[in-house]
Image (tube, rainbow, N blue to C red; front, side, top):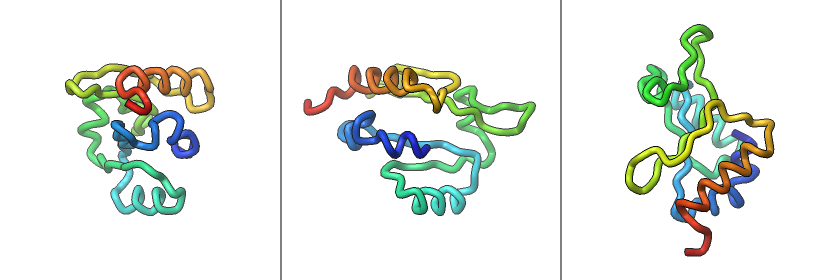
Length: 109
């Protein structure tokens, strides 16, 4: 999530017309502490029971953890872009994500 934080202004237009929500199986208190410590400029949602995580196919049943997936939901409520899994060390993943955000919420418009 540090990479999202570090590239937030570029990727997500500083939140203009875009809402970024990181969903985690961690407890809300853990997420709040981590977000404050890392100075995250976006929102987090705790899903300790994994209901949403499972709906998006991000739960790894064998390892009992949530995979890093990126899903963009468009203004119509439909999935407009997915990266499964999101490769946090790949600049190409961030480039594709930025292009997808730009299509749905062009900067300055």
